[in-house]
Image (cartoon, rainbow, N blue to C red; front, side, top):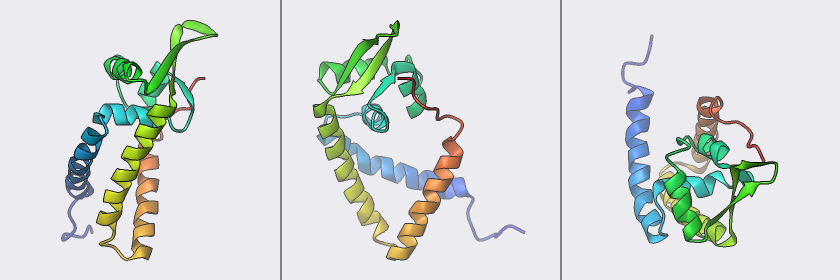
Length: 150
């Protein structure tokens, strides 16, 4: 029998997610980023170069929706796009040194805020929570992730 005193997972996770996003927005604004732009910069972390379509899939965005975000990031010198030498119909996207610096600065500020929130938990509980959350996230997103085509 389910625990009648425990809220459903979505009832707990959704408000937490909203609070985390609300806390991130001022950090992103200070760094001149939208949430989608930050997602693109983070998405370029595991691999140095993605096709636009593979990047969109990796960050859970519609490939046509991120074109404007990519245009803005490229105009600002945070990413580079170049034709794929093996298929000139495809653009490859990579992070510039400035893009990496902006991403890393925003991520440091966000992680500092997260550390303040996590400080409410004893250290051992914090480690278990993060490990468990990573496992649940990995399971939930496994189908949408695929290795990037380089």
